[in-house]
Image (cartoon, rainbow, N blue to C red):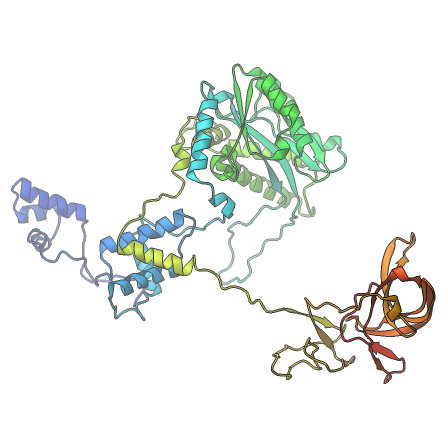
Length: 606
């Protein structure tokens, strides 16, 4: 069927009116006693149309009729919206299958659908008819830990916060949070010739980032940023031309502007947080009268004895946000950092265009780039309130959106998914679909043993298809297993070793040790004779508490085949005998005599 309907030139025009006009005309006829012809002329509606509506004829929509009625379509889309609220949004394919499930439950068979499954055109038409109620959006992924934040946790948080913020003005409520500014201007829509497969932009970028600590009040005051470089040392050029005065706080307490620090890892730790609190926030807080409240996340590095004692001494309430709830309750995360990062990307792109040869941001340029970012962000105009600067507006709206100032817990609680879902067949179809597609148990993994392939360098392998009842295999050579008693061919390209297979050793018994016995011995090695090595050896002579042995060396990576080291004769104590090994198979087909054990020997050789 056609995906878009276009009116042909010269064709008759249909429906040059809306439903409200029809209702208004009928209301005039019923209440005011107008004639149908007068109402049709006044509201510019065809007389036949108004006459049919008045007598209840031809009340269906023009064209082909929908498979589901209006109530059913709205119920389907309402359930789809509920799924999105709970973090399990549906795509177009899910919506089609949910409609099929509903048709099957109702026992209906639609001729236009293949096996009762609606097509792509149907779902696009459905979204077009209800574009005011539902739309497609790009979804951001959140971890299950964030999704597990319940209404009870947030209610408890707001109950405690309400007592903490009692009689505290908005200018005394602050939120701090650290973020990073990356050396990447990001992606942007640009102009290309139609048909270009790989649109590219030449621009150097790196994965490096610089950490900054931001802090702002519910009244719209932004403290100068606290910058943390990743470095072992600091240079004076890294602290010049940074944020100072406007658009940040221009009071005497912040007259020196931004403060700078460095750590080996580049992010904030307990020491740097304490320094920020003492040098950046505390001088500003001392200027304020009354009780102050500082709100932030619950990182362990923010809780030091010195910070807690300073808060108690200076009448500062230190409030922690609920765990994994910063995307809901952290003002800077909710409404400030997004416009701030957008301004940073614009400033960074202009700088990179002006310095195309530089591969990354020089630390000497970072302070003035940060200052330019704050200025550009602050100069954004708003149609609603031109009296306040953009930074002030962002901070005030951020505290408002998180329900802190003015205090309103519903600003956050309303963002959580609601429990009420429409009852009836629509809900049953939804539940069945979610159980089938979302909440079915994944099949358990096979419990049979997996095998490790030991492949000699330079040789390839093929897929193994063998079973315990058949000796046929696609492997180029015999396969060893626990049930096989055949000798091992050392020319095989690889051996298949069971992960759980353990070498069977005989217990060490001096009476069983004689000349020609194969043993696993422990030898101390290394420069300081502190490393324990394990070698295979052949007993040459048995003394009272010692053995004269000759060492052996493995010749394959599987640790199955060994050869004798002629000049490696040494004496070991009886205590250094780890195990007695079963007698190997002697292979004399090579130039050098080789000894092949049936199972892997746990050796540790130099």
